[in-house]
Length: 151
Length: 187
Figure 1: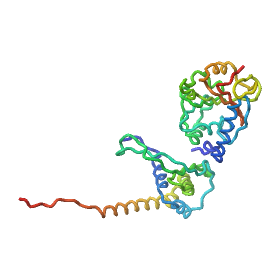
Figure 2: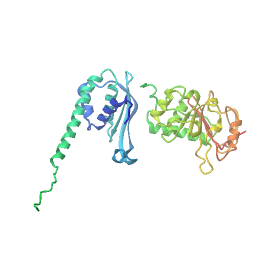
Figure 3: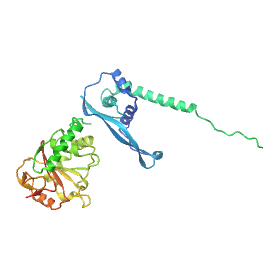
Figure 4: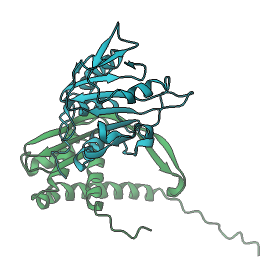
């Protein structure tokens, strides 16, 4: 157990949320909330692949699972905040939207963005997760042994 | 996070790095010629040429040593963002960057092994001036004789004596670059 406080935990959480969002969803929420601010590219969206590693049981020795396609980009707003995005798949416009949200979350409008983009995204993701778990739970089979009445 | 320290990469990475690589290759193949190179806009004290060379040649598998005044936070952040190259000391570096005095002593860099002569350091030397005049050069890639303004001659002569081991040098100044591979004889 780590006893240090991870100061990036909050940012990690929202970047994970943006990375897992379905196609076009972040852009739709962002455009509904505000007009996109001006920005300049530090790294224009580019597509590459990255190795995903895992640990057996979460604690074993790390091993390579396989490569996934990743789109990444970095941009800076006129006010100086830097936003990064790493998105699975070949989705340049999604990477742009995610990087914009990441940059805006570090600025003065963080509260509004959280309410308009992150909260609905989180609700959708936990609803989808719950629906999937429910569907799986409905097919659960209880095995039990009946008394054979030998006595 | 400072956005200014991250700006200044290639506009089009594939094309920019291909052009820059061609420049470095030409310079290495013809010691004593001065090439124009551009593409990157690195933070001070990196020159345009040095920044472009680092962007082109460095990646996560090439440890870089930043010597002396070159080792600033801005340079570290910029290199990490654009190349991901790990920083290291001179004894494990594949590339070293700095001005000539800061890079000394030369015997702290790996010169390769007889089985793997490529496991040596390439020194990127920032120069105040760079022109095709000065010390006389002879060797592969030079028809009869070439000249290059070198910071000194003795170090390069003893480096040549190690051939096929040894260090390779790239000299940068503003947006110009020249190279001195280990095969070149300095007269």
